[in-house]
Image 1 (cartoon, rainbow, N blue to C red):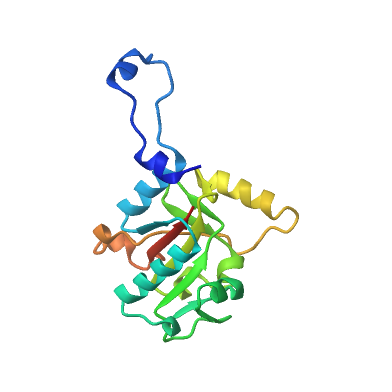
Image 2: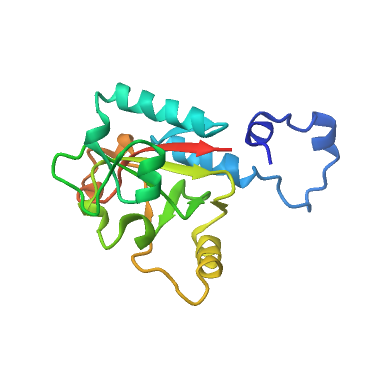
Length: 194
């Protein structure tokens, strides 16, 4: 699956559209495009890369943009931390500016990410820093939370993870809305590798 072909693909011609029966199901965007739209509409920073080297360069640019150094970004996954030259820690120190993590699935209809204790251990979303950098691949899309949970159950058959939750992007347009006060939405960078 080539993400860019789906994202930049040609739309049907007007002749094809005219001939389409009104009883046919509506043409919808692929889950990848749907996710990208929802995620960026909410204010998420979507960064598509082709390989691991490009992902490393993109991470360096994120650190530079925010004036962070590698010591201020923590990763709770030892293998992921080593692969990206970041500090591994089983807890999040107070001086941490951002958390680097992966996710289980990218939820297309919400523009969110399904995570569990494999990513955040026993921490609550409130205990995480406000800035998160997520690393995912194009095979992690799920159309909705229900399908994401089904995939999660299949992936960990017989040993369902705990602390399953979704990460949501902090919607900057609703910053002053009292209903969002105390919510666990975060500023999220997503590095999506093909």
